[in-house]
Length: 119
Image (tube, rainbow, N blue to C red; front, top):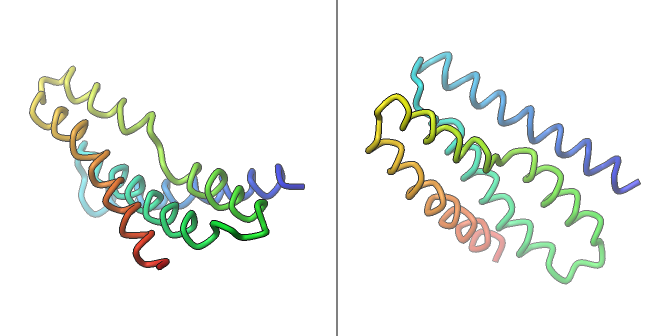
């Protein structure tokens, strides 16, 4: 049964990421991955909150559904690395390097913020 809920939560996370991408590109037509960075930071913040709030919880299934399912579906490490590679191929070297450096920093900061909010 856990597999079903993880799958459902992961699908929901993917839909949230898609809606973020759609909304950003609709209002700001650009090749810059603002929504990808935002989705990764949001997912990291939710993971920080859930990890802190659900630690020690007797319901391991809920932690798995939230962290592996929803946050796993919302965040996307593959796009976080693929987009800078595409930008580099288009000779946007500085922007590609900035994304590779700042995305993990934003995500780590969001994770810590999520933990702080849960505390």
